[in-house]
Length: 71
Image (cartoon, rainbow, N blue to C red; front, top):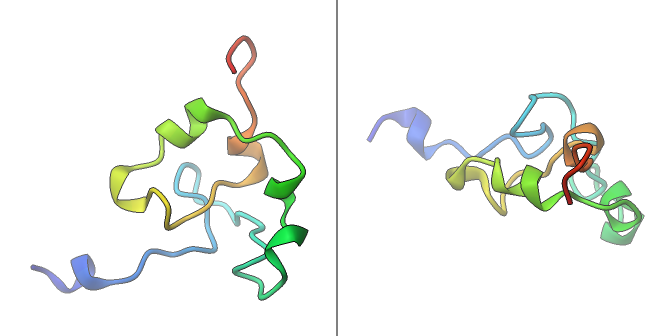
């Protein structure tokens, strides 16, 4: 395995667009203060997260929005 395969994922950036994901937990704030606790997160967007980052890196508010006509 290469050294890159052992690196922890960057949890402060969206795995879809690479922008800051504004995650409260990453910022050291209580989970209940995170934007995702009060906004809908699209199932379609979650499905687009690469398998190796699912459950490890949060989406940003923009990428988490449902696309027009979807969930």
